[in-house]
Length: 400
Image (cartoon, rainbow, N blue to C red; front, side, top):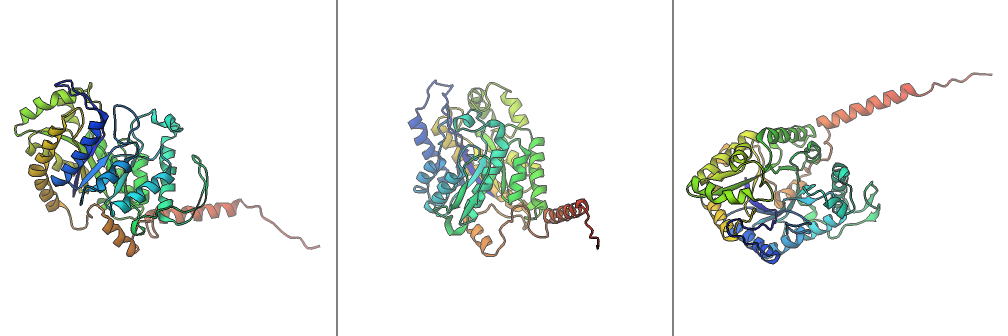
């Protein structure tokens, strides 16, 4: 099990003292938080992608991640969202291949559509085409990472003729991709189709919805022949705020929750913690709540925590990371490992992907030979051929 933190890069006034960080301070503090996460024992740091206030999560995440690659040794560098809908797939392929080389393979990413509607027209896209954009753009990105010369034509960008990506992915293996969605079944389907991972950033929704989305992904992952349903790659998001005493945690966090740009000015803190994975309390309560996620979705590979939001001072965020690293993560690692069956894979690393490719076991998009998806496709093709033959006009020759 991997544990990580992700940032949405919000600049929010601290409601307890009225201070607001500058953009420069928030950017520098993000670097401090990522480096501290590695020291505290986390496996992953991920950044969101935004193009609008109050967020300074970079519009081009590889800029931040490349900077962090030079200052960390083991931390996997990822994205909480890469806007596959509004970014050019060619540029994404180039940027993340280059980052992969700089970071010696310590890179994966999460594809998503984001939650800011105006970003679509800012980049010349139509929000009503969000799902088709996500599907087509990722199809092109996948091909760019897996084929040397590309001829391609789609609906949303200019065609490519004899295009070769530079640089090619490190060791001939693309970064692992998680497809992130809170609400869209089509994205869970897309993740399963390619044999990629599925990230449900479950910070808003109740557990019934989370369970439904992950189950759909698992079922379709097995349908496409990438493995059994319980072996599919699942990542979850979540939030926590801790103090030694749970009452102190609630008292300290409440003003930040009430004014947070992500979920403030809505349900009360008590309602939100009851209905969603947000946990505010003691380290033991965070342990118990996080272990409960396994009861919802089965064994999964990655747990990400949102920690540096809502105007929390950076020093408080660093203290929270230390609490997680010292009192929570060791227990979670032990408990999750003890419960996980031997045939459930760990989260993919670059080394794992290289070895999988060497063995010829990389997923086949749409289903490898013998999968249920492949069998259904064969049956549809046979039916179509029979229908075509039945519909063809009969001909006869008449001797004169």
